[in-house]
Length: 208
Image (cartoon, rainbow, N blue to C red; front, side, top):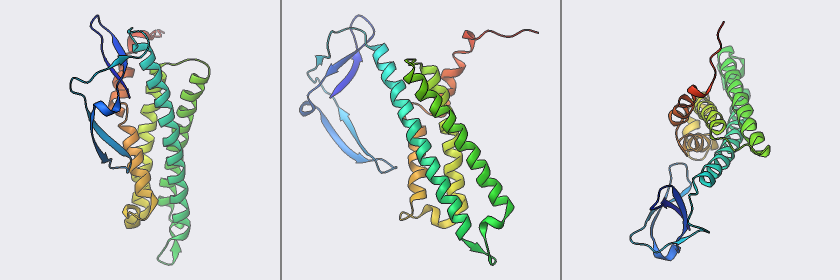
């Protein structure tokens, strides 16, 4: 496996570690993915290439991973909205489908707006990478909107489904769990916002 560690002269290096030399405790994450707690105790390691500062390469990798998570989240939001609107068109209450209630359709419309905001920012992050611009600020912008939209759509999907939205046999709850996990992977929405706030000094202030 590849691990990062501080170099004696400063910076962060990448090292190869034999998986047989570490202890691992596997577990299931709350969104059903596989995870493990890895413990390294005086574990032998070899530099991955030259023992130089790899901070730039690590940042570039994190930007790419963040864009991938954004794309996954957009897919989960898209499917959550589809399932929710289908449910509103089929589920009946007081003799009519739920889609006849204006308040519920307005909430579904708000979900659509959140989805398109997320899709736009996800595309922005992906296109920036395709153009060779691996910018952590762009990644933070996209991840912040993805987190906000994902939380909104996940919560509304469950609410509009009612009790069925939290049953293990129905997919909505699983999409909600995955969207929550994505929001907190590589930094939460609050972390992304702090990254953006830290860049405010780099922008010119317009004067009238």
